[in-house]
Length: 153
Image (cartoon, rainbow, N blue to C red; front, top):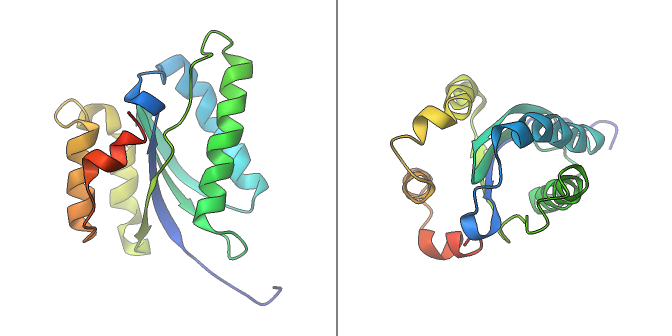
């Protein structure tokens, strides 16, 4: 659509299957640029990416031509295949079946970028389950966090 203009920002979170701690720093430093290339190829803009050993956070734009479910599926499928090729010892690696995605007000972008950048420090005080409970509560999502995380464990 040549005359369509959108600015839809999303905060996306997904974890390793089994909540395994596969995402060591040496993997993350190569994974993040790879995820960026996946998004760029699909018309999305990656604003921020970070994570800890068991999950990732992305702040990204959603192009008008893509559904968030398709974009996250592409990220997870392509990055999983890349991890298996680039790190052959990680044969058991997989992403959880689900994900969480939250819309972001552009005025909140800087604060969210700081939050994502500081994941390692943040997770010294709060685990993934506590983080997801707080996010679900903040966004008014009435969901069972434990059930959500079953896809990750």
